[in-house]
Image 1 (cartoon, rainbow, N blue to C red):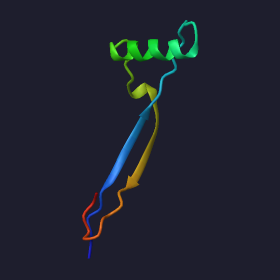
Image 2: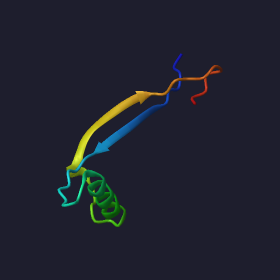
Image 3: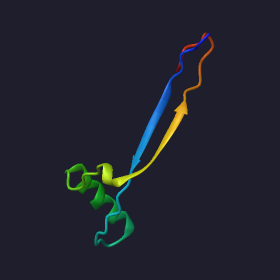
Image 4: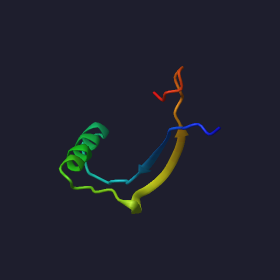
Length: 64
């Protein structure tokens, strides 16, 4: 008998940004601000990997 399973697919996009800043914390803040403002758009060209996982099942057979 076949049972139903839930599988998650997680794709990762990655882009390296060079930015001038006083220190690493400022660089991180600036890039995060710029990203929130839509200055960096990650797309399929920035694909870095994919992970497939089945979700654990609770007692009673329902997925969490």
